[in-house]
Image (cartoon, rainbow, N blue to C red; front, side, top):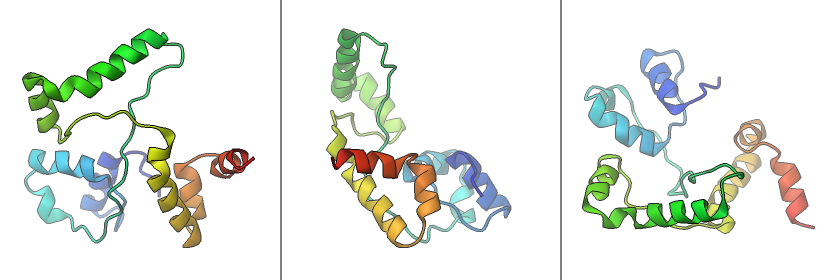
Length: 138
């Protein structure tokens, strides 16, 4: 059963609608302080990772100079005391520049899922995975 987002998964597990769900650890870290009873209502039975987290994405139509400025501001954000407080409240250490290879850990986990027979789950997590993998090997 696909919940669509982690917060809904938390509600479904808590209410008994589902017995278990994969929930992003960052989402849980933010949810626990907001809901003191949540920690006692859930039991973490396993973890994956650590792994690279989601990137900040922008529209392709955004001018290159603006993308560069935004990237610079995000990377330098942790140096500003006010911004650092905001990052800390949201369990973020800092932003760092990344490249495609930084997501090889996710690809390895998907490969492990496929090997374990969870191909449908992996396909929904990474649409067109086979197509992209095939094309990059040429």
